[in-house]
Image 1 (cartoon, helix red, strand yellow):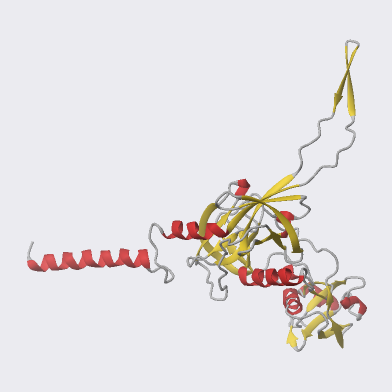
Image 2 (spheres, rainbow, N blue to C red):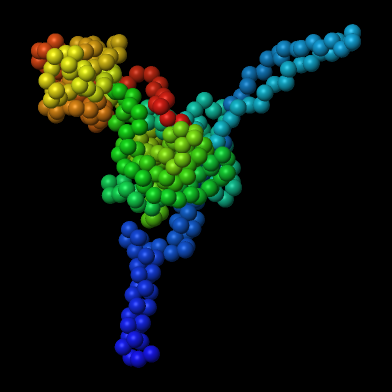
Length: 371
């Protein structure tokens, strides 16, 4: 082999080596090697807990069944069923024993058992919850606990690597990984409630029943989402997390105040489609959304919004999607006023509505399966 051939071979080997090095160490600016996922999981898992719940069954007089065998009467008492229970996950958000999880994990539980990474068990107490956002705070009597680091979700990108940690089907501290499949997903709309304004993080990291309340983590080891639900029991890799910055703000309010007041209008709306425009004799390019219903005794209904109205603007902002109104409402405070420009029977109406407080115990959208 002459000097020229050796030189070419050396250059090729060098380039291949540099390419491998770049691949191993420069994904998303984070050093990547065979230990990366394991190191992150090992550290973050310290602040992840397993949650087991159970409900008491009120004891009564079990009914007895009589069985007659050849003239011999046998009395068989009913066997009382075992106490129903469930499993989920959570993250430690304060070193003195405050844990954030999904409310549906601990809802209606009579007993909550928290298991830490070191397998120590504590009885937890539900001290605050917000069914509107599906978050709850559970307190255990412990000190100096490792606290989860909350990351910034503003700079997330589709395709970023993520890690999910939790207790799927009760298998504690299971680690899976994948990518962010999509950002700002709207999954189902509960109009006038936060679910309609949520912008979920979609991931293909494996999430199963029991992962709810557990963290979705970036390659810096920071929590960027709280794993909350999946779509369809037969679907694959369609998993969703609530952004961690929103979860943190809810958790802080729950710890400080015990509850949260949510803005509420009480509108059920639909996109303004061509068929509806023809029905009302309006041009195809007419902007707005169609009011299907104003909930009885809601701020919308009490201030004169009617089914059939077409909402075109809210506080001067043009509206073409019902989710836009939900988002505007979520970003306002109870008591704030909104000014609606709408079409009613071909005439323009201006209506001012003072935002009310969401009543009752709002559940999750039933368009999705909750693990």
